[in-house]
Image: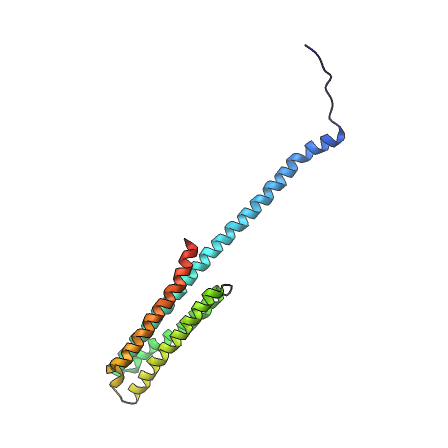
Length: 174
């Protein structure tokens, strides 16, 4: 057996060996922090998408509620049915503002919401004109097939526009 003398590490090597665990701890800490921030951002995006889905669904539901209230008023002439109609418009406006805030950084979604907003305005214009006619004592709005078809077309377009908003959010979630 040969005996070689052991070399003692120099001062620089000892410092490097002493710093290695600290460097590893800092590196692991930085990587963990970055990963946790990404996880938090992912959770926020999922929550945002769910809020968009909920609010857009509410817009469509409340538009249907407005139609129902207007139709009941046209048939009965009872203004009580218009309370839901007016409440629906307020709720829709609130939901559209919330949706615009939720998607403000996404031009394509903002454009889809612009379409939804225009269709809502068009649909409520048709509903409003029939209400005005009924208040004037004309029963024809409830029986006017052309007006009913225009209203149905607007609602079909609205359903499609809301579906486009929701499809985008569902693609993010998947």
